[in-house]
Image (cartoon, rainbow, N blue to C red; front, side, top):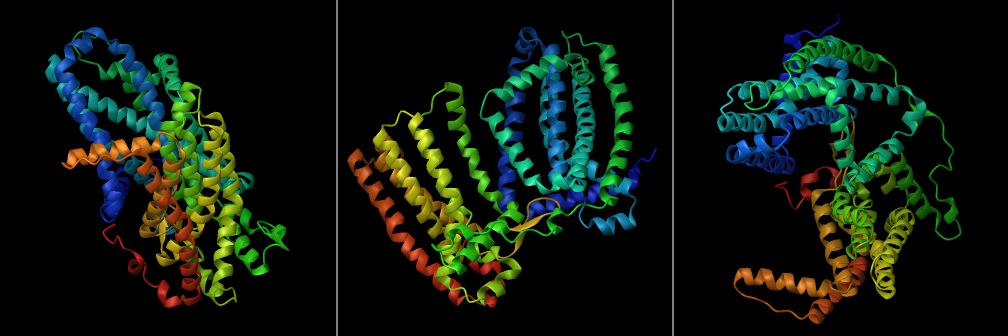
Length: 561
């Protein structure tokens, strides 16, 4: 069979793994996020799991169905790891950097082997410490030294087969998107639907129910045989040696077969021609703003249509706007589980909606890209440029924010007066927030690209603009919410009293004082800030020169990040 050369693949994997570590170390924000991930999701299970096994190992063995749980758990873990590998293959690891140069100097099979080894090393690096610590604790607590060998080898075998299977599925999906004109044209829609399904799963009990169901159904499949291999040598547990041997045979058979299949699939992807649906001529009316004729001047409509067309062609440039959506998981989960809409959900929906609409206009100069010189010299003045971006953001986002806020408010315990006021506030802050975003974005633009997938780089707002705009929206909308929603002023007053007490100088604020201060803050940032931001954005555009686009660092306040 056409298998990779181990030495060549290992060398490629070593280089790719070093580049991965270097990319994390060179980005302080990514390094901080990775450190937090290691602390919570690696350090926590390592320390907590090892301590629990050392303290309660005997009780766990005596009172829990370990063998049944291990079989179901390893089967579900195999499926989960395969899905994770599939997603990463579609998004990042399906291709190698400098692909043309690599494929002309190294056989495709060795490149594929290097990519798979890199992904396996990445996952094994995260799993190694918890697995080794918990298996060692298990061996000490139960006097089962064989566990120290059986558990790591089982986890490694499970990882290898799951990563290979997931990599093949991911490569097949990439082939489908690369060679199907229909899928290539609507890939953004497909990914958006997949993201919505994922969000629906994690915000409800569906994901847990599916995992429990799979754990019961898959106990007799080859993936469950790893459960028996995991518990070999554990006193008081009688794993099937036949199943454990079957796990060994499963790995011995599937790894070379899956590797050979993966080589064939990767070769098909890398050497085949891709479809380019965007190369087909499109009507000039695509993403235009002609319906605004007679209401909006032509040059302003041109700016609006250009923004829409740019977003349609490269929606990944707005990927950052989806990140805060995860903060809605808790209130959405509570609403789904309880069957009722809590008072806080309309507030969260309105806040996220107003934030995200403005965030789409947070880098107006950088979004122009190579067309910036043409835009500056086209005769469009600053007011037309700013108003065109405000229309592009609000014409799409404002109706969605208003409807979502009104519907959740209507279904919540909020009084009619309260949710109507909240809906009106969300509409106002959506528009004014877009203006503030343009003011902040023109003050702190970003022109360089950042990598969002293995093969895609886009221009995203600067960290300074992102932070300042988010702060303004939090204070402005938060002030409006505290002033409007009953119970919020009392909660804020209680928090202020609690933290000032911890600091040694307790402050007792009346709810009316909090409401007044919050309302004043909302008025200040919602009424005073937008005109100032508008005038600054207009002036910044009209005074902007190409020399200003030379260095992103000069526009960053938070250079440490």
